[in-house]
Image 1 (cartoon, rainbow, N blue to C red):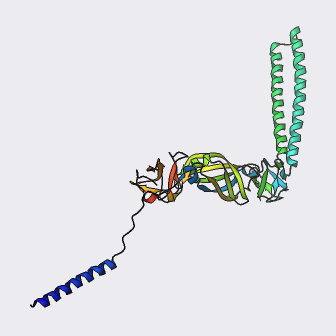
Image 2: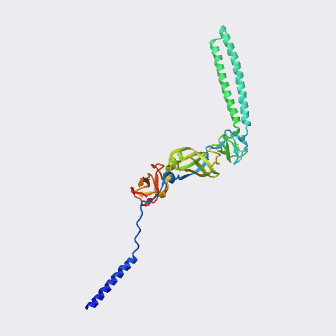
Image 3: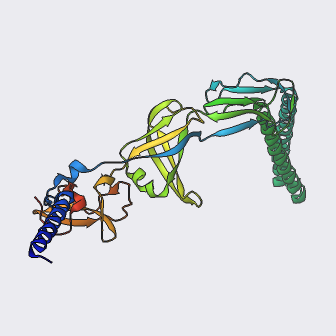
Length: 347
């Protein structure tokens, strides 16, 4: 091959190689700027902490829910209360025909008077017998018989007294009164019906002792016990509550416990449904501050310009975590924590 052709071929090959290199240089992405690690934003625990709101289904319940029944056999003369009516303690809720029981009381009263008369005569005879026995005109056996007769009559007098008391008690039962301040839920009988002992007359719901029953998650029971304020939100608006007790018994399926709370002011109506709400008394950290390092969830704390990872016990991905073990003045990394490693210097 002539030398001129070799030179031309070499020049062509050099041009192709240079053009390829230039093309590769133009197509390659620009180099990334150096990353600036360790630049973070921090806030104190007191500034970053939140107090999550908790809630539980609840219902206002009356401590007294009673079906008031007749205690004697009699015909119903009147039922002066109606459904939905609010009545005071001792209010008349039913009147029964009392004539038969009044006659029985009159008979018992007369029997008691007769017994007292017989006792008075027996006492006089016994006193006279003792005088005669002291003079020798009355035997000891006859005196003992008189004493025994007097004791029998006195026992009969006590029996007559008890029968009169029972008859008068039956007369009192002819008027049925409310045992507590209540709201009449339902009339269970009608005027003219013959009531027997145990026949329900009206259904009452207590109006003076009303509590809230709430089913609280077992994990939230302690926070409810320590909450500063609890409110009932539901039928009747928002009302303040105070905790009465939390049952130690656990509902096995739902893993809940029953909490009983009392209204601070005017109570809601019995049966009102809603929810109780309260805030966690202990500070919690927002879920966006949590990072995972070494299989544990926690936060980074600025300790003299060095990032220190602090795992939080019980922390769950996507949920606020209790800030257990962190001092109130601890400076938490709230920005740039995703790129940090334990022991890294901070700027």
